[in-house]
Length: 377
Image: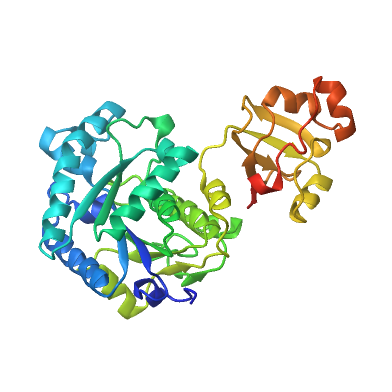
């Protein structure tokens, strides 16, 4: 059964495994203390879902906000990277304890997992995370996941838990992702403007959809905004998952949104093979190759990428690194694992396969990126 409406996300038949993302502004009040009444009601909804046979993974923000209060740090602990790391170190203990306590009241075991961007970008570590999530869910636990802000730097972090939630859903083989936000969905313009209309269903995140987004978080506590949520939706749709944005502010927010049928649902594409889904969800590329119109058309037909169609090479990537394929209009067409390092690609670009051995001095590989190691976007 496919997910075609918001209510399908809480039905174990259509969505047997769901990721629920909770933002800082929902979990932590402006006084820096947990919003226990609100969180208690949300945990009751999670427990009810588990009792109905649905597996639930929680991606929870809030560690930095909680830790900043305890350490008396300015700007909610986000004044500097070192402040954020210190606040996360303190707040993560409090956050994990809070989830463990409230889930425990329903007889559920909380399992904490802290992830960095590299944990899900590196294929081996990604598979380890997948295995751990599968084991925990099979044992009946509720994984509670956050970015490991204590060690993550600007260069190796997600920067928001919206995209982390989508990547976790992909790793866990989830059917849906539910983003609890401070707004009830995507609007066709800034929702504060007169006449702004909420978009109930999105079939593919297009440039027109991106143009509707605003980048900042209105709360001042979180790090995400509508732009990050659309990026999460892109990751989800490539992995064959539905993703929804709902207003997380009411007590029992999931039930409130479902009853009112109020939110924005991003419909999935067909589920891809696991390796291609991982490639499609990657956030960091090591470099890029530019292709001509002929190569772009060949990719659309399902062909591998040959060097003859390459017009430019960016970056200093190695063989096996993930790189982007950029079309003549400047748009990213695909992502894939390069069969050559960047210097070799520069030598080979524009040349037919029959010339490669003379150029390289050894027998060439069949393609610059093989179609089995590439995903079209």
